[in-house]
Image 1 (cartoon, rainbow, N blue to C red):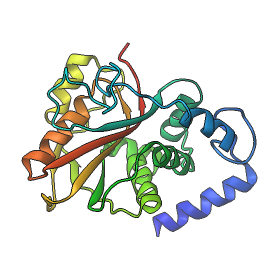
Image 2: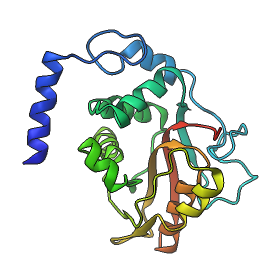
Image 3: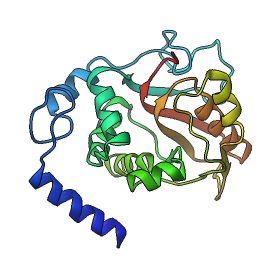
Image 4: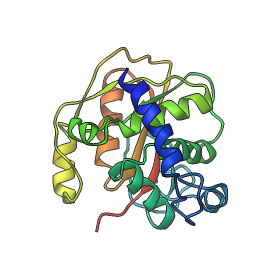
Length: 227
């Protein structure tokens, strides 16, 4: 019932206060086709962990438990405004555009892919009224015709925003647990919004591997260097 109410409210707000493009300000959507084209034509082509140029998304300098990663772009400009509106200004409709950006960034996949969203902290879910990464994952699952599984459960309520590199690494080690059946034949693709140090996705991938996953890849909407 809550989802139905949220959908009705979203539709009413779209009429009363129509969305503006996060790139050019055009009325009609949170991200117009022209601005989306600008992003997708210049995707991020570096290591998701250090930004070193690589075709695989993760370079040989890291002994990561995943060997493929994709990022839409650097978190700046229009993409930063789109993600910021989605996460911090209740711009729920942005989930559609962010999922579409990921859809356009990702290559064709073989059968057996399962999308696994990085779970949002309970505090942020209460503040926003939705789990933002689950919304993106569900939308992407519909676009790619692959299932979504909430295999990762939050174990702590710590928030990484403004945390140092050392704090993020420590927080990640106790952030999640795996709940559910992990199929060793599946290809699990972790979905995250912003990757900074990479501590979260590395820990999440490690847990999935420990639970029996043989292939874990990563996809994110943006990469942001830690200031």
